Structures are given as C-alpha cells and as structure tokens.
Image 1 (tube, rainbow, N blue to C red):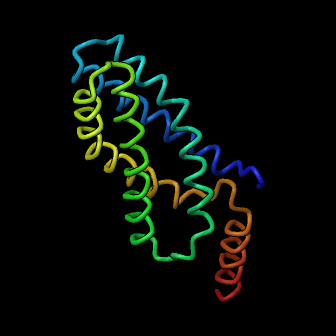
Image 2: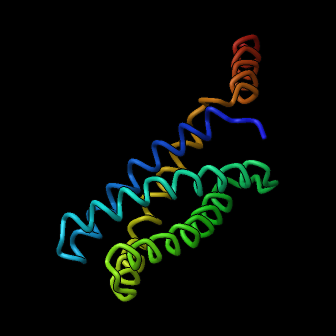
Length: 146
C-alpha cells in the first residue's frame, strides 16, 4: 500500500480538529478536565490510524458526485468515530453511560466539522498531481482560445 502525503495531511488536520472537539465534549460531560484529556489523547492515537484507513478505502471509491460522496463519507466516518469514542470514554471513565453520552454528543458536532473539512480538502490540490496537471492544461486551453 502506497503512503499518500495527501491522506497523511488530511489525517493530521482532521485529527487536530477532532481531538479538540472530543476534549471539550469529554471535559464538559465528565466534568473533569483530566478525564477529558485522557480520552482525547487516547483518541488521538486510535483515530489517526482509523482515519487514514478510512481515507484509503474512500480514495478507491468510484463515487464521483462531490456532495453525495462527502455526505456518505461523513456518515461512514462518523459511525467508525462514534463507536471508537464510546468505547474509549467507557474505558477511561469506567462508566459505559458516560462513554455513550460523549459519543452521542459528538455525532452532531463532528459531522458538521467533518463535512466542512471534506469540502475544504476537495478544493485543495495538495497531493493530487494529476488533478493539478489537468487544471493547468484546462487553464492553458482557455487562455489559448482568447
């Protein structure tokens, strides 16, 4: 499996956003900053791996429609992410209900944040050399018609 600099960059940027969201929600729900930090740190590790694998699977997808693709990716990632958060929240707090509350709370916040992240990255050519070249050719063709 070829390592993709684009997928690594997307993984890192999303993880920063996701970890901050998890930390804040875990802290607010548990009432304990230390527990919030522990959950966010553990999630930092597990979600980096899970997100990278999710990106690799979706990269091979034949779904071309931007909005349909982003919506499906948002829901598939949220399912994986929420299960991970619930389990980690349960492990760290020792209370399955607290893990469920944290996981449930992040469904909405993370879906909105993830959708925005996907839309932004869809516009960025970083790591997409073929797309960059195609855009350059289209630009040259457009200029030559003038």
